[in-house]
Image (cartoon, rainbow, N blue to C red; front, side, top):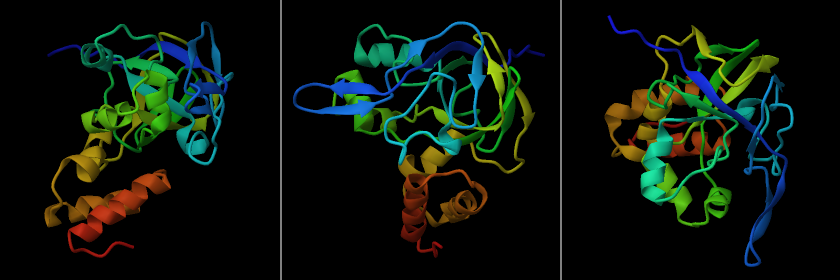
Length: 227
């Protein structure tokens, strides 16, 4: 029987809002983050030292910590044809051994002394394009399905590089981050998906307005009612 290693934090990165872009387009953003060492406090809305510029769409309880898979870095190095810095995609935690395929929305983990719940996938905005240096990149990122995901903090504490994601509980009928992305972006509109779409609307309480709007649109397209 194969031995599986629990997901492990490879890097912890934080950053405060700063000016992003160039003379043609410049905006405040917290997407630029740098690695930190030692124990980092986990609050209900962010990691200590981290911040967001536009709180209407970034940060808050349901987007307290952004996680991205270490395994995706090899893929993006090939696509972008360049070396990538830590937190290249604006993540707080780069994690080995946990991708969107395995991350179930609503799953609860202990990381260090904190407890978190997988809340929702990321929807990339134009600031990711400014950060990468390619305005088309957010669309490429979205189409790849390699979105990363946000955590909601349910118990504050501390974490550090090397801490493991210890699974405490997972919904029996939960949707993975990848499955939600497939339903909204990757599969043809199909009435057979209406049950899953309605389930996502009814049972995934931490999804933001962007995801809910897209789910309702997909549900209407199947011919089913969308609340």
